[in-house]
Image (cartoon, rainbow, N blue to C red; front, side):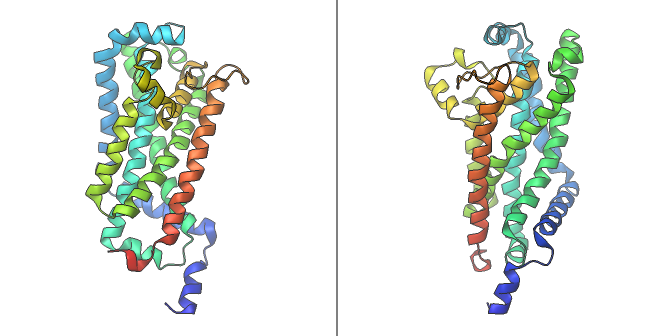
Length: 297
């Protein structure tokens, strides 16, 4: 590549914000033109929500209430976990979409363009954020419908922190999704194959879900599961969302008492997730920077 071409490749006339906007629009359009992907990715969490509440609701009610120190429905307990699962699946499909770009030659065009690599990753991530907002909102609404049908509970009884809490749960899902979005993109750049990427991310996704506080209180699970859960990012995402759902401190893997109430869960949980976002986001951008058009098959 000539010096002039190399200089042009590194300097974009649109600037970072403009490059981010271009990539955001491209990925949003790609998603809206293929609604099947969005529908199927939402179907799995919905199935989990309906089946788990129907199958395990009565069995786990006592353990859940004892863990929280107050009477609680398993629907309310499970919804935060399904919210995080929804964000996890959306983040997974981000890497798969990148592989599609690699296979159809679009990624090669991006590599030789003057677009900023950070803007490429950010624009793609923001498109996933929009999708997560829509899907998490649907899950929250569905959870309330199931609770109302089951117990006749009011909206205030569903989310103790009200509308601000619901918005906070959406925000937690977004913060949680960034690290796995970055990870799935790194896997995509390493494998450059759809099947391999799907296998790799799913191999992580389901064990992480079940080895966390997602579906049952940690204190009733085996000791080794509790140890793994303390190192599992899903535990921190679920606990942060659950703290907003119940309006109280629900974290058991880190004992914090400095902030009071639900903030004893939110502050450490979001700190862990933000640190993961920064580290894996930097790795993803670095992977994009080190990629070259000659590497793309």
